[in-house]
Length: 124
Image (spheres, rainbow, N blue to C red):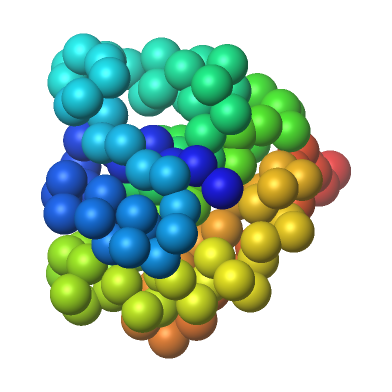
C-alpha cells in the first residue's frame, strides 16, 4: 500500500509508514501545500495512493461524490503524532488491508477503528 500524508499531519508519519514496509510521501513533497482536498484526492487516484489525513472534509467529499476511490484514512484524535497513534494506525492498516485495497474510508480514534466501504451509501 502507498500513502499520501495530508498537510495537516506531520511529515514524521512518512518514516513510521516506511519503517513498517509501506510507501509513503508527505503532500508537501509532491504538491502545493495550499492545494484543495479535491486536488489531493485526484492526485491520489491517478497515482494509486491512499490518503492519510486528520481532515474530516475528505470523508464528506467521498460521500458527496459517491466515488469508490481513493481510500482515505482519517484520524479523529487531538494528538495526531506518530509516537501517540502509530501503533493504532498500523494495527488498523493490517485489520482493514483488503477494504483499503478495494476502496474504503477508515476512521481511527483512540478507542477503535472502523471501515466504510466505498462508495458511501446514502440512506433515504
